[in-house]
Length: 407
Image (cartoon, rainbow, N blue to C red):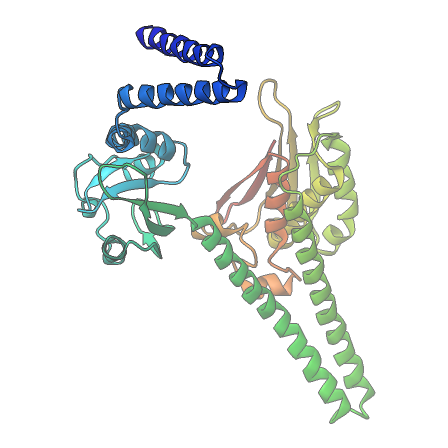
């Protein structure tokens, strides 16, 4: 308020000087100039007497310090929102922070411990040392064997935060185990498929060359060779059809069916369609179904495919038992279950867990002689997975095998 009053006083003085000069006979212009000069002198005097503001530089350290103080909580909040395992370490290699995903994947590591207390892999530690020395990001692929085999893309990079009290570095782990597993499955699948196709193609080529050469004028040999060639062509056709079925099932594996299907007529239809095969193998298919409907959510055509595979396998591989029993159970308060039971030789216990793998066979010779492709149970597994059902296999040597579908 004092400075404002002083300013008004100077302004009044300047005005009085200008009026006095005008009354003394000065020209109006001269009086106006004199007023302006007086006003300018007053402004300059006020600026010189005003208290000086603190230099801008003096505010800098205070702001920087505030940022530095807040950097810890900020880092914790940011890495806590990341779903990858992340560690924050100092230039000395000591742990400063870790997020929840890191603790879940690798166990809790106390702040202040060296990163080598958890990761003893020379490649990981060398990468961290190189990043600290060069301030440049690095990346490697790292495998963990225990408690289970996992593969990670490990990346180290400087963590540049303005005003942080020390140099920090970020160590992150991206789990690619599933991608590596899929890659292995794909390569195994291609290798198995090419192997399965190579045998019939080699047979076809051999018979064609024989018919073009030594058997050119032998009608009986040609007739025998043509029958074998047709059988091999049919085998390749079945293999291609099964591969296409698997591909279609994989495309819609995540879409659960929502239609109600009555299993009783489905099982009856499958029994009727397999009756000629069962008659040729001298096997009887017996149905044990309750009265009334037994409904589940499903796709009728796919369920027909499931039970055709299971009952056909029971007829072929349990042929010695002469009978295949199919039970449809719908107990109150329990899941619907369909069991296909043969009374054949049974399956050794070591083979049971692998039955639904693609191209896996208990006996390759026996499977090929019965025109199997090695994909039937893999198709069954994919269909049941889509139907949110599971396949339970029980077998005892000399007593037969039971394949149970539980919805």
